[in-house]
Length: 113
Length: 114
Image (cartoon, rainbow over the protein chains, first blue to last red):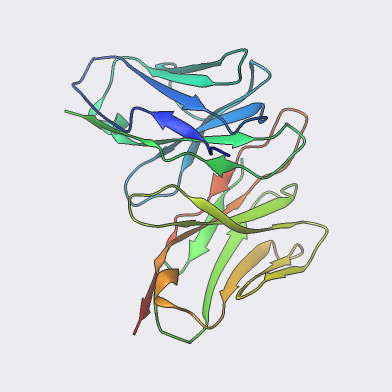
């Protein structure tokens, strides 16, 4: 079985640009969460989606948005990129809202110059 | 919101020794406590977890203990091996109808020396 997949693996952008990151959850998993991991720190929660609805939002500015598609894949969008947005963006999938275990994808390494 | 503190930030042990990493949490409603291992450049991997209705859980060389009254939980690794070297993160969450976000600690860099 394939695990959580994310694309692209790496991305380099300049300040002010926009970026879209993609995530495919484990087959059968309906919940997707996004986390930002700055170097040397633990992951920080950005969004959670379940059945295409936003179920949770972390303390991130409105420049960050996300959505979930009917096939349960998800996109994270970040507008007006800042240098401080440089981080590893992790997607985690969960079977359903009633399950605790979250499994992470390999992440997308975003560098903002 | 939830706040998770983790200690120590770095831990160096000799191969075969035990390692203990401790975390405290602030939200008494948290009821799920996973531990993740993250090797350099790789994804966090769930290694063990514990729910609030259990005080201890063991899986081979790894064990986790939970003290709900004191709001702290710990990871114990026995007979450490070089491949245990990684960054370990504790996390806390509470399952609600709206979902459950994980709040992570700051991580512990474990180094197992030969």
